[in-house]
Length: 240
Ligand code: CA
Image 1 (cartoon, protein in one colour):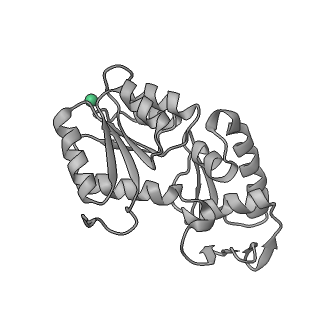
Image 2 (tube, protein in one colour; image 1 turned 90 degrees about the vertical axis):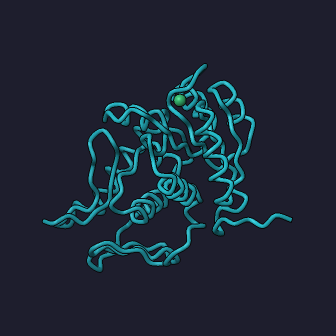
Image 3 (cartoon, rainbow, N blue to C red; image 1 turned 135 degrees about the vertical axis):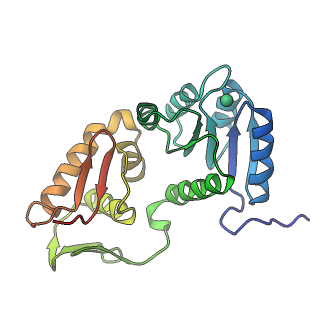
């Protein structure tokens, strides 16, 4: 039997790589297999979409420029029914392309040419994120500045004062706190907290964030929950 050489945590993680440059595809297949992933390849958008819809993948590495259906087309079709994490590979670096891709449901971007180690690191981040909140390892108490969240007792306090949160608000705050300092898109918040997709959820997220902010920040001097225009929301202790 062939022993896996990858670090634990990759074991039995299945990836689909959709890339039309054959040499790059073969290189990624070889490298990711060596990292311990189970890797399938598709060389065009049509095959990629078909495999992604039929297969049970933990993550897609999706090239943006593909014959047949391009990466954004594959992503849009996939997102109708599946929330598999997608890391897009792109030659384009313009901010508006990035934003367009993230709005269409890509979870992350990597601009070509990239270092293989960076690809692996980003894949691992996305796979970790995709795990349900309750399975995430780590402390039972999360904190930021004077905010504290006790996950076992499901109790939130700020400056020692109890915050009266609904179950969804508590889950939303848990997600934001686990990922403090990172911008979370509405898409991701919708998937992780509401198990919904983006189109149906935008307004739900905004309303929930506003309510959470009313309890979390409004009564206190320093705001922790920030809106990042056009991108999403972020929990961070900024200098007053
Ligand atoms: Ca390409």
